Length: 429
Image (cartoon, rainbow, N blue to C red; front, top):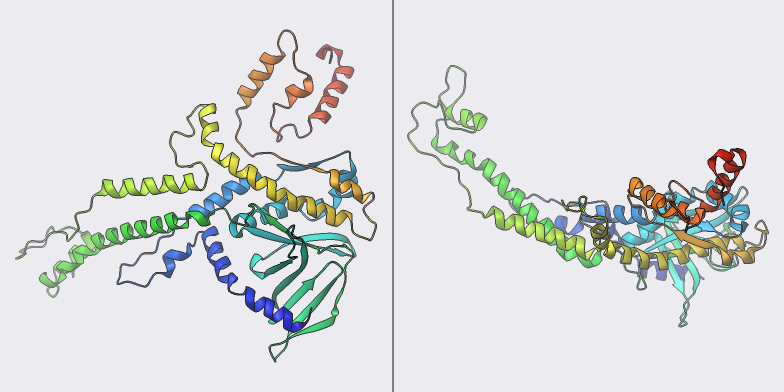
């Protein structure tokens, strides 16, 4: 790869940054469209409603909360990979890259090896350019990460064997810096692309027309309220704003302060609020309908639904059905990236990780972060265990959430040990 080729690829990619900037604005609650409209005479309120920020947080909390994605095998992962994951705060970084995938449709993570071992970190999506083969089953053949380092435009090119650092000169050309370049030992491009959809779509672009209209409508409502509040000021031209009373106030001053026409003395002209006859019910119904549609099209339950918290368990399950289908689909694609991360670390040619072929057999277990009724669960377990025992202790313990019993098999062993030490507890069998 030459410096000129690097420049051409980056120049072609730069226009995408505008789209990424817009998507980020929705994620943080500064919705792009409402601020892009042409300025109007005051009042010109721009009120972005952060639906997308809330939706991304719900998705992230439901699927990628700390402790809800675990890795299981015959012990190989715990002995070879777990320590590197702990060192890198893997759970937080997994949640961060999932948030990027929800926002931009893709998230990127760089893996590297240093003197103190393996590292991985999330990259800014707008700085990343993946380059795939043209085959039917596409594979990542190289990757460009471009950014500014101390005001110097820098691009690092990765392939399956080495990384090359290019820096832009005063002549606007990318020149290879051989001192900062070198080889890596991963045997593959050391970058992972995470997605949540087959077509690399994000979680909310399809709902933006609804959201933009909601922002526009509620901004207009804010404008009308401000016009109503300021309408009394229109009376200043027909009131006495010259002569002052014993308190040093004119008639106009009193109206501005009190918002009522009382104790002004002799007023020659009648006054009334200047307002538009607006149907509040129509506006509220429209806003409620838009809000419902936004959450429905996002496949997320409406947290403002007054009946949700008081519904029966099966009714709540049906309301969460769309969210569960959505997240199950996201999980299918996202866990491919998690699997690749394990394989990249395992296959590093330093030989630190023993038996790297076992990386293919690690099972990624994703649980949902949902509220639970502990009393109801305990009652069901007691009922099933009463009289003749028809379920094993391990099955009964699996009824409890992972936050209480993370490893059911380990808990069974603890129960056995306690019953051995204290036979009063009863026979395990």
